[in-house]
Image (cartoon, rainbow, N blue to C red; front, side, top):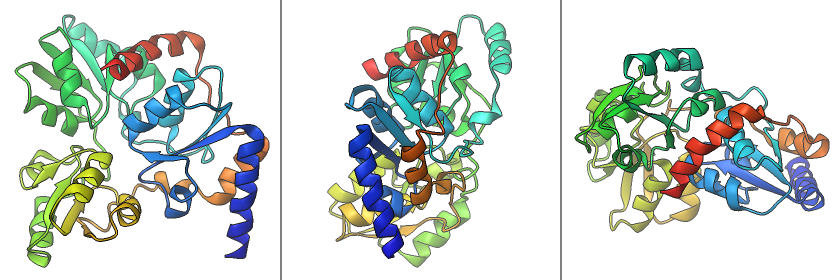
Length: 302
């Protein structure tokens, strides 16, 4: 414990020395959430990367998040303490595959989930997150949408638009594993609890939920609801933040196995090493960053 206290003190000192800000995703380990300047979902962290003051951004998440920060803040040093923390869903589509899809639907707009590489963002018209996907889809002029890479989020957005959405067959390995049987079993175990799930879940799971929302949307629902018990259908790291912000509520994981191993690769030692060495640094080639920035800024403008 003392070692961790010393590490936290050194992190705080180096943050001030480097004029650094620490951005932390809701799925990160509790020890990392507890030292954050801002904890949030992809949209909140994207906005913060574009607007918060600081010379250094320490991004505690996965690779595409740090890339997004580097694209939005080209003059800042962007660090990813867990260098090998990737997003398997983002790896389910390549720029070449997206260009092929665009050739099949030349009149379609490309909406890409922020959970994508910089190369995919550069090939897209506009980005979205789980909290604004429906709004983004309805904002574009085109009536046909190529939605990449998450088939579940694309199908969820289809429920709220008259546009034709062609979803890519990618998925989040954590959310896609959640099953209707788990929802039924959780309701049986906690009959008074509301079920909140992430839109990356399968359609048949969404059909059984009381509310569907992004991670930050789930937190807001729990904290503002008159209900006292909730079943949470997303990555279990969110439960730490909910417990801190809504200590009077009782929350149960829909699936205790809903763990993103990549999100758990960050630890205090890696954050300290990153601030000490200013490595690993995330950069994006200028030609890709320029095109990707357009897609991201169109989303943020909404």
